[in-house]
Amino acid sequence: MPTENDFRQMREAYERLAPDPGHFDAFAAKASQAVGAFPGWTPDELGSIAAPALLVVGDHDFVRLEHAVQAHALIPGAQLAVLPGATHLGVLRRADLIVPLVGGFLG
Image (cartoon, rainbow, N blue to C red; front, side, top):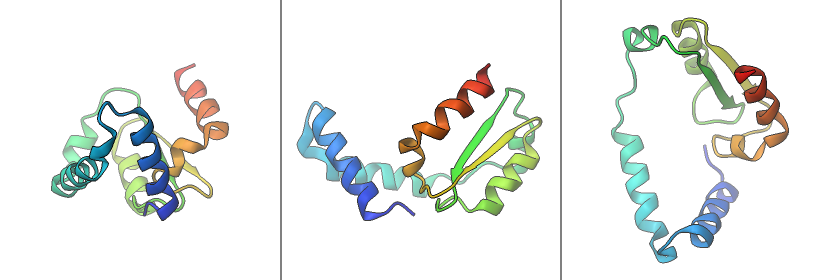
């Protein structure tokens, strides 16, 4: 799950970059509602992905590792990376790991 630090950093970035910095709480509520309403993809939908796929999760992610492994198995030719010490949002702060991963994937 995102930690208090994740949410603090997300709020700080929003307030620094958003055209209307005072609306973080409304933004966060809408984002949470959208995530909660998403039913997920079916195994058939995942199996029909024809594009190269790189799945990246943190080992402290709210995406459970067994779900990431299942998605990896269902998407033809997919690659899976599990970043140590990272939450879902913390993955974005691991440029030391992400940049080489994405570079190798795209390379």
